[in-house]
Length: 542
Ligand code: VG1
Ligand code: CO
View 1 (tube, rainbow, N blue to C red):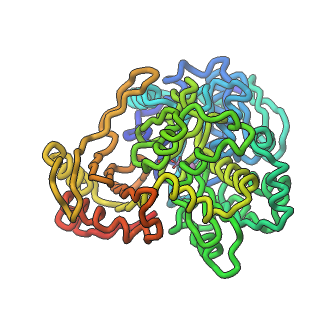
View 2: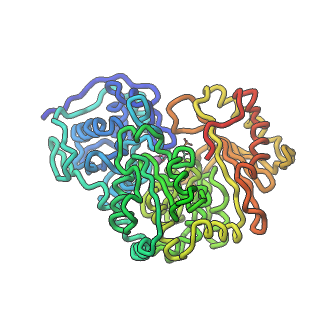
């Protein structure tokens, strides 16, 4: 078979965001678009010659076609070997693990995560580096730079590879290993957690519902939670990955995981409920009659991690993204370990994990993970919760209540304003940015501002600096953060993150939105939401 070099013009907008390049599927399907970005990745990472990669995605529409294209391009660029998930499936954490396990030079992950899938929805591609983590900023910038000057791409004219059977095969001179997407990840989970204790929990009648939201975690959860740990058949719902995720948003929050919320809030509720997102790196945790905010989940996992064999010796440190609540910092403080505040996006945890400075990381967007891989990991969080519940022999509600009694409660919520005109979203940001220096001491809606800034992060390991990472307004006992999303594909999404701290001896029984109302109002006033956005009500509240 022959390598073809196809001339192309650069495409505009191949700039990776918070997590890879995300566009409308039709944009990715434009002739040459995917190819140009993939060639730019090879170019930005020293070429494909002699390299090994992993390849897989969340199963959304265009996943399989894109995989065939990337395989043929990898072969034409001289790659030695590609490990690809059967039927093109690999969850993001499983990809990260496979990169590390096989010591590959990196991996291609096809996903737009929690964004809907389909011909008229979203598609995405990100590249993870040899440490298993998302390409750091310098690398994504090099990809973008390459995409702006690209002149041609290389592709083999070989036939498609059969992805339906797990077997080694060849594409021109390149080895292609089609593998079971679950097996190695399953082994890793078995090493980390006390599976016997969790089996005992289920054997004692403990019930759970896991909603895979028709996305990639279905096969993983079926094999591990039902098949291995013995949860009742049917505990894992919506377990077959579909190209359009059944028409839903595979976003594990109370809005989009409504089916699960209804189940855990109902009269016949299971003891435990969880959901995951499109590519399996996020999680939502609930107990009977209770929703656990992701920021609280991170704090609880960190505080109780020693229940699991992998963390029995304790944690090195805890890192959280800046919009995530300070609940995790309080745990780090009590444990006497380091706490880090990083920009949004998992790529910023990589250096800290590689350097052994942190063991557990998390984001308010329902991402938690540890040093077992270099991605957030939805099923890992679910299994750690199960391990903790099995050892502590108590309910989710009880664990939260005792956590708050000890550390206090950080009432927390995120308000998203979606599909905004970019100029309007920028106007709100400018409005607040312009006041940052003058806010200290001001009183708004009964709250007093202590100080305000725009977050710039200096990586403690390599010293790189990332600016413009969110506007932070600190009040006495409260904080608001505003930033624009870097994963959307339409207009702008303004995210407003709200938290109010209620000390250990305070009232922990309030409804979060009610507790946060004065802070919400203060932010809307400061940002002149009514004037500049023409509305004050968000589209999504998590
Ligand atoms: C969002 C979340 C962020 C997360 C990112 C990728 O980014 O806020 O915490 O890391 O998605 O997650 P943004 O820029 O839209 O706020 V995933 O599961 O979509 O890969
Ligand atoms: Co995701």
